Every structure is written in C-alpha cells, then in structure tokens.
Length: 267
Image (tube, rainbow, N blue to C red; front, side):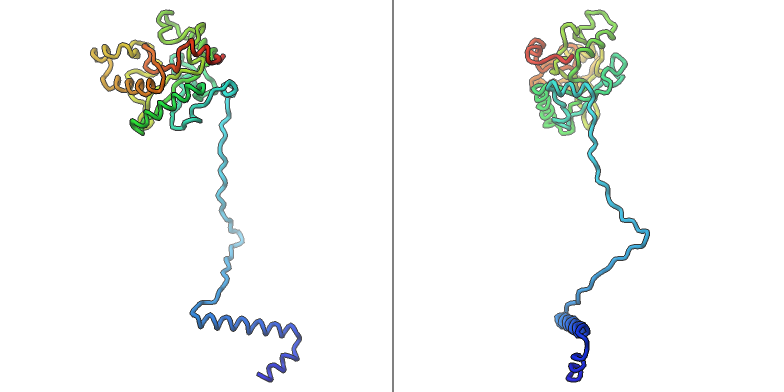
C-alpha cells in the first residue's frame, strides 16, 4: 500500500482523481452486496433507424355550421332544444321530402328551436316521460316555423278551404308555430317511434283525437295506439301544453292571441 501511495504522488493529478472515483464506486458496490440490494443500473432502449413512434392524434371537436335561418332565430331570442337537452330526438320532417308537401321546405335548416318559456315546458315533458320509462324519448317533427314557410305549405295543400284549416293555420292569421311556441311531436321507445295509428302529418279523421273512442269501437284504431297517444298527451298537458282536436301530434304552449302579444312572429 505504501509503494502504491508513493506511485500515486508521482502521477499527474487527473490520474489521481480517476483512482479516487474507482475506489469510491467499488466501495458502493460492496456496500450494496452486503445489504442484499442490487446496484442501480441504467437501461438504454435502442430504436432501429427506421422506427416510427405512433402518436395518437388529438381529436378536434367538430363545429356544426349554423344556417342563415338558425342565426336569425338565435338573434331573435329562440333557443335550440338539443342544446338544452341532448336526450330529446329531433327529426324535422319539413327538412326532408317525407311530408304532405313532398319536398324539403327548410333547406339546410334541420334544428328544433322555440322561445325559452315553451322550451322549458318541453324539457319538463321529456323529464316526466323518462321517469315513466327511461327508454322513452320525445321526438320533435317540427317546432318553430317561419311565416313564409307557413305560406308555402298553405299554397301547396290543394284541398277545400274548410278541410285545409283543420290541418293548417291560415298564414293571414298566423300559426303558433310562427311564434316559436308550438311543436309537432311523438314518442320513441329505444329510438323507434311508438305506433300512434297514423303517420305524422296524416290528413284524415284517423288523426283526430276527438274521434278516438269511435275509431277504436269500429276497429280503425287499436286500444294500444290510443294508449300511446294518451301517454303523449299526459306528459305534454302536465308540462303546460294544450292539444287540438284534429292532430294527435300538435301541441301549443299558449293561445294564439297570447303568443302574438308576448312574442315576435318569425317572418
């Protein structure tokens, strides 16, 4: 050991430091072996030259483009029902060709809008319905309807005036739809519409709520079909809507005269 120390002093200083580091590391290894611990080691992962690490892309939320009519409705104070309650289903029949006119009346507009107070009533009806059965949901076939669309429908319906007013409000008087306070609506169960005895927009007596008892007696409607209609009326009436005698699907949030006083017509 004495000879070794003499040689160390003869070495250059950097050799001396290297030896000190060697002895220090060797001592740590011995201490680890005595304590039963394995000395720490570094793991190096080598990637091949052409290896590409896959990175999951960040998905951007798709922003729905609003139509000109929708922007107009928002400016006038109406609200989108789906933004208030996403469990409600919306299928605007006048945004398709599947209606009594046989053509798309709304163009690129396919959202259900109402003024806030009628909208709150509808949310209440949806909640009441889902308390009865969570697999049920309201489905909206029409909500706010601009007056110019009302006029187009009126002109397209080629039936006698007395019959026409049973199914469609004269644009001269205005419909409660034109004031963002009426809905055409039904019920789905697990996404499938309940059988109401007729399709939506059926122009005939089978759609008349006032004739349901008679229609069941004559076998033109079944008891189950009428029960489905009654369920719809139950939740809508309890939420503050009223129905009409010639369409099982139509409900008003308030009377026409009150709508005219409280809200602006959608032109």
